[in-house]
Amino acid sequence: EELLGLMRGFFAAGVPTIVLSKWAVDDEATSSLMKHFYRRMIAGETPSAAMRSAQCDAMRTFPHPFFWASFSVTGRP
Image (cartoon, rainbow, N blue to C red; front, side, top):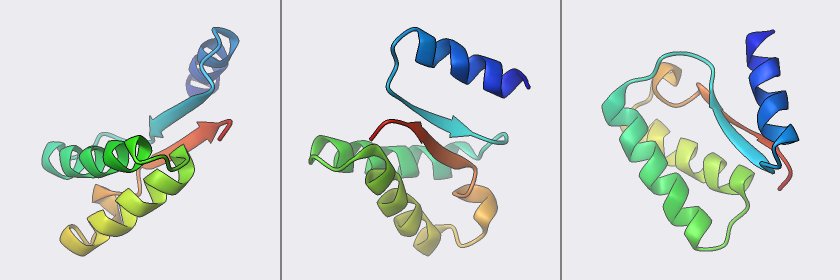
């Protein structure tokens, strides 16, 4: 319920897309994943495509889902 309220607040404020983490994450794995994610976004990919690419890349280095599966993209493309 708290997460939905927070998302609703951001969307009401005009934020089109949100990247969410569903649990506390590892700093090293997250740093690597987010660098890849933002590189792909800058290259012109949609947020969901960039996150998918970043998660696939992270799976090679950090195979356990704990390190990459926490993240999801919500909102408009």
